[in-house]
Each structure stands twice: as structure tokens, then as C-alpha cells.
Image 1 (spheres, helix red, strand yellow):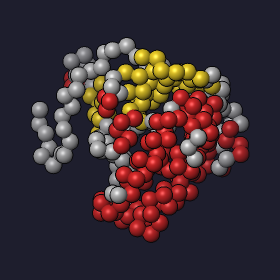
Image 2 (spheres, rainbow, N blue to C red; image 1 turned 60 degrees about the vertical axis):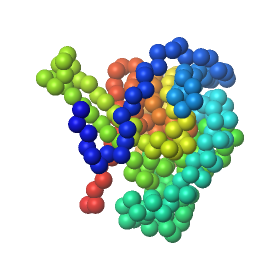
Image 3 (cartoon, rainbow, N blue to C red; image 1 turned 180 degrees about the vertical axis):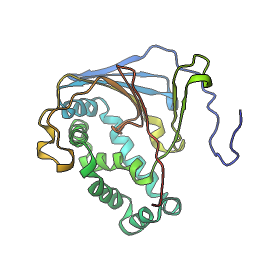
Amino acid sequence: MIIDPSCKGKINTNEILREQPRFVNSVPNGKRFIVGQGYDKINIVHVYGGTPYDMGYAFGQLMSEDLKQLVPEYFSYLENMIEDLIKQLPPLISKWLAEFGLRGALDLNYDITRKYTPPWYDEELRGLAAGSGVSYEDIRRLNLLPELIKAACSVLGAWGESTISSTLLHLRSLDWDEKAPIAKYATVTIYHPNASYEGYANHFHDYYKQKYTTSHSFANFGYTGLIGSIGAYNEVSIGLGQKVWITTE
């Protein structure tokens, strides 16, 4: 294996978890299981519902205690890293952090991006906040963090003669800060929507008005409280891996 000397990461030598998920608790629209222990613990959360708010509310109920620990812990960690972040990020975002602080920069980022964000994300965040008891504003800020810092990670696609079976292989490496508190909250959320979102966009932003939208069941691989997909796979075998391409143009 060839490793770029500039890479600061470590090869993951952990064994694949093969144990059966252990049931933790349930609420009217959700169930929670876990596998592993300590930093290797993974939450497996199933949410069901007719609206994004329903599923967000169920997740918030199931993961309330974790969210109440994670949010203040993570923001404290990030605020101590402000000076380093300012040096690493694009000039405009560094300027926001210097002028408005972390929470102010995240709020500004929300104001800029909300026009291009489907309305059901906001509905799910509001349900998550209501179910967990954590403020909607802090839940929203937590979700805007990857956008603010331009989280990148690594993606690989291989097919044809590049694979033994000549089929498509899709890999996404989650290149997150292993020292960050959020690393303790690995979560797979399986969404089971049972209704369309008809009419949801009629009261939101002009850019994203839609008459009728449905969704397949899918698994979202990430962290507790982060609802946007950085890696996901649905019931009709479509996979997703997030990757950013930073440009100054």
C-alpha cells in the first residue's frame, strides 16, 4: 500500500463488528440499537413517520441524552480551535469566524444557504430539537458545521477492469478529526418514510418549491444529530458519498 507522506491519518486496523445489535429503547416512531463499546460503539436508529418532523422527533427522543452531552462538548472543543481553523479555511470563512465567532459564522452560513436547502431538512431539525430538548438553533448550527469548514473526506469509484468482479465499487472514507468529541457518537440512521411530502415546500423558499416528493427507505451513516448525508445507501441500491471540491473561482 502506498501512503502519501503528507497524510496525518492512521490505518484503521479495527476488526469488523459482527455482533448482533443490542436493543436499547423505543418510542412510537422509532427504535434504537447499539453494537460495539466505547469509541467503537455505533448507534443504529430506525425512525418511521409520515413527515420529516415525525422522524426527527423520534430520533430526538431516542438520542436525547447523547445530544445533550454532545452539543455543548463539541462546541467547546471547536471554540478552542478557532485560531487554527482561521488559518486553514478559505479567507471569507476565516473572516466570518474572526468577526462573528463560531456560532455567528454558522448562523450567517445558514442565512446564505437556506434558499438552496430542501425544506424538509429544517422540519426534521425542528422535530429533532423538540424531541431531544436541545435548542433548535444549536442543532441547526451543528448541522451547518461541515458546510462552514468545507469538510472534504475521500471518495473512490472503481469499475470494469479495475475490479475483480468487473462491477462498480464505491468507497467513501470519513476523514474526520479522531480527537473530536463527536467521534464517540457514530450513528447509522435508517429512515422509513411512509408518506409523501406534498405541499411541504409551498410555505418555504421560492428556489425549492415542489408539488410532490417521495423517498425510498435509506440508511444514513454519520453522527448523532447530523441529518445531512455524507454517506448513505438506499433500498434500491443507490449509494451516496459526499466530497467537496474547493475552488477560488
